[in-house]
Length: 288
Image (cartoon, rainbow, N blue to C red; front, side, top):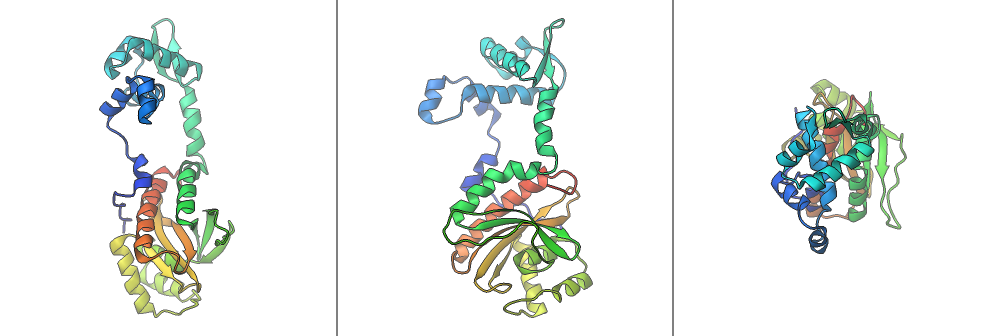
C-alpha cells in the first residue's frame, strides 16, 4: 500500500512550496533596498534561479536578448547574471553564435545531492531545526533483513535528551517504526506475525490489539508508541518510500513519555510526513 501523502499546513516547512513564477519575477525586478526593508529575497539570486530553470526546461542554446525577453528581465541585469553563471561554469557561452547553454557546473553541484548521503544533506537543516524546536531526537531507520538499523540521527540541545547510536538496530516491527513498517512495508500476514513474535515489549500488547493500531496507522499515515516498547519513551514514526514506492525506511521523532501531549504529537507527525515525502523524492537507488 502506498504511503499517504502529507497534509499541508505546518508553517516551518511551507518554504518547500514553490512560489508563483510571476511573483518571483516581480521580486527579481524590485529594487534591492525595497526588498531589504520588506525582509524579502535578494533579486540577483532569484533572477539567477529563474535563468537556470529556464535552461533546464528549454535546453536549446539562447541569446541574452531572448532570455531577457522570455523572463521579462532588464537586459543589463540579465547580462550580468549570465556573465556570472558562465564564470561559475553553470552556463557556457559560445562566442561564435553569442548563445548560452547549461554547462557541467550545474551537474557537479547536483551530483553532490544525487550520490549516497545527498538526500540527508538536503534535509539536514530541516531535521536539525525540528529536533531543536520539539526537543526531540530524530532518527532515520532503514530495514536490514529482520531488523531496522539507525542510518542517522539529529539530537537537540536540551540538557536531558535521548541518545541513539548510528548503526544501532531493533527488531523489524519494534515500537512506532514497527507499526509503520507493518502498515506500509509490504509485509505479508505471516511475515508480520513472525516478526511481531520477535519483539520484546516492556509493556506487552496482544497481537490483535497491535494489528488494530496498525490499521489506524494505515488510515492516518503515521504511527506512535507511548512507552510500550520502552518505558518512559514516546515515539512518532512515518514511513519513507524508496524509488519503487515501497517503504523500506522510517523517520522517527523520539522524546520522553509525557513530554508532548496528543495534539503536539499529531503536529510533529504532520511535519514528519512532509519531510518523509521529501526524503522519498530525493533518494537515489535504495540509499539516502
